[in-house]
Each structure stands twice: as C-alpha cells, then as structure tokens.
Image 1 (cartoon, helix red, strand yellow):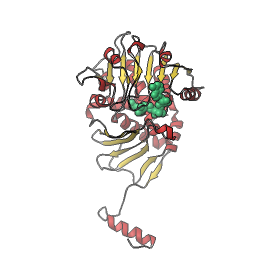
Image 2: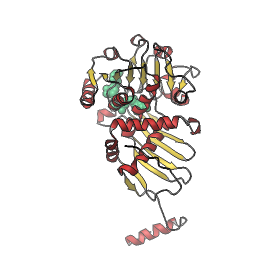
Image 3: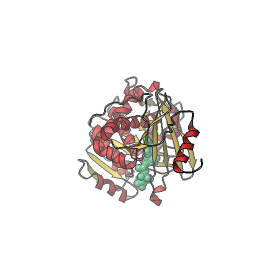
Image 4: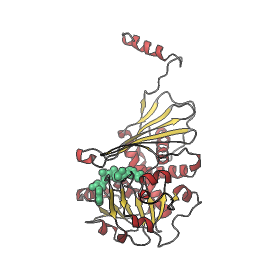
Length: 360
Ligand code: NAD
C-alpha cells in the first residue's frame, strides 16, 4: 500500500483521529507487518535527513525502583509530537507489559492535536524498524544470521524487520526463560525465518553476523562479554535504555565503533553511559546523510547503542497519520471544544447543561 503524504494545515479537523490498540492492529494488517516497518523506516530516515530542523532534547524521566515513565517531545517547527512511554522490567510477573505507550501529533501553528494514538505496538514496530534501518548502513554485507538475546515483546518485530530490510534468514534465539524463546519460534513459524532455540547466549551468537540484545532488567547486566565478540559483527544493543541499565561489558564498547541516535540522551541512558562523554561516537543522521561513514571494513565491530529517540516516534506517528485516510481504521475523538464563539467557552457549558435539563 502506498502512503500519500498528508499536510497538517491550520484547517484542522473538528475531531482528533484516535488509533486504539485494535485499530493499530487493523492498520498493521492492512499493510502487512514487514511493509509497515519498512514504511516507518522510510519516514525515520526522511526525518533523520532533516535532523537539524528538529528541536531535540533528552527525554524527561520519572524513576521508581520498579521502572521509569518518560515523556519524549520534539518538533520540526510545524508539527509537534510527543510519546508517553514506560519501562517496567518486572511487570510481566503481574501479567503486564514491560513497555506501554501512547502519543500525540499536533499542528504547531494552531496548537490543535491532529492524531492521538496507542504506541505500545507502534513502539515495537518503530524500534525494530529503526534497528533494521541502522543495520542497513552498519551490518556486514550479505548478513544472513542474527542472534537475538531476550525473546520478549520486542523480539518478533526485530526479527521480521531484519528479514525484510537486511535479508536475515536465520535466527538464533536465547532467553533466560526458555518458554519465551519457544513462543518466539512459534510466532515466527511460516514467516520464512528459520529459528534455532539456543541454551545460552554463547551458543546463540555462534556464526551470527548480527547480534541483537533486547533484554529487560533494571540493572547493569552483562549479557555479552568481550571474549564472546569476534571481529566483523554488528551489535544491535536495544535493551540498555535507562541510567544504570546496560547489557554489554565495557570492553566490548572499547573495541567497537559506536553509533548513536542523540549523544546527549544516549550518554545518560545507553551503553555509552559506561564511557566518558568525550569518547568518540557517530550520530546516525550523519551516516544517513553521507557526512560520516557507516561500516568501512569487514573486520570492524559496529555497535548501534539504541535507546529510542523522540524523532523516531514523531516519524512513526507521521506514518500512521498519513495511512489513516486510506485505511479508515481510526475513531473520531471528541477532544476539542468548539463553541460557536471561541471566547464563549462557559456559554457552551451552560447550553450543554440546559440540553441535559440541569443547572451548570
Ligand atoms: P520483555 O519483558 O517483554 O522481554 C524481555 C526478555 O528479556 C524477557 O523474556 C526476559 O526473560 C529476557 N531476559 C532478561 N534478562 C535476560 C538475560 N540476562 N539473558 C537473556 N534474556 C534475558 O521486554 P520488551 O518489551 O521485549 O523490551 C526489552 C527491552 O527493550 C527493555 O529493556 C526495554 O526497555 C527495551 N526497549 C528499548 C527500546 C529502544 O528504542 N532502544 C524500545 C523499546 C524497548
């Protein structure tokens, strides 16, 4: 399905299009999961190519011992977007998601919201799309095998995005919880991917061109140690995305060329927090725009230190917003007060009370 661009003009709609979880799933099915992620990746790349036109700041967190809630705002001067997202690694013990979210796009010229969307599924899609996009610049040419350590909610999307955009055919899966790997293998059955469930991280990375770490734990874990990493691999480190929450041994970082989204945020939240702020890293937007090289040699270890940045959510919301006129999978949310006289907000309340036969 081709997505036509929608402009957010001041003549905004009288309602706010709302994409519920149900409708997000319908939208994804209308395009196909892989096509949807390819679509998001295209929008992310487009927005990274106009990086300098965005207002950028590290996200705003509220921490508890159990997890974090974060607000992720950005704007390109015409459109404003933000995501509300949490990360609570222990939630699954109570039958809850580790990561949930919702987001808004607004017309910066009128201040009116133009989209309100669930972002639990959309975050998984955009994170995978973002990882695969980075890998198209960083992974060794001809990569076919990916190890994936951490087989939870994000993992299926990662595997499918890497199949679609990088050409991965073989997945080597490991999780502390073997039932998580079995679930992943079941879900990927029939997608064209061959999945081998492994008994350890060491076994999973054997023969892998790409290693994805996407575990959840609110601590500095060591999912991979230096002696496990051979030359020439690409590491897609997704799970370390909070202060005090990392996945890789520091020595791996010292041997790798590190690529990041927004250094000011990654240094607080990513693997990069294990290094000094002046340690050299390359920003992905510079690679996409040809200002900095991606992978330059077969032996190089490349590391995408992914934490998730607001512009990726902005791009994913733009993609969804542009899709809605074609799919129609949204509801009209009565979120905007529209009195006949914009200054007579109270009069509108009075008339509503009168209509209900009550005093205001
Ligand atoms: P999840 O809880 O659904 O899955 C995490 C899995 O990791 C679980 O199956 C758990 O058993 C496994 N695990 C934990 N410790 C492990 C270890 N030491 N070795 C092997 N497996 C281990 O969580 P999720 O929604 O899939 O998210 C995974 C991580 O990705 C979280 O930390 C989340 O914060 C992060 N995340 C990052 C981004 C980003 O943009 N970088 C976006 C979304 C989520």
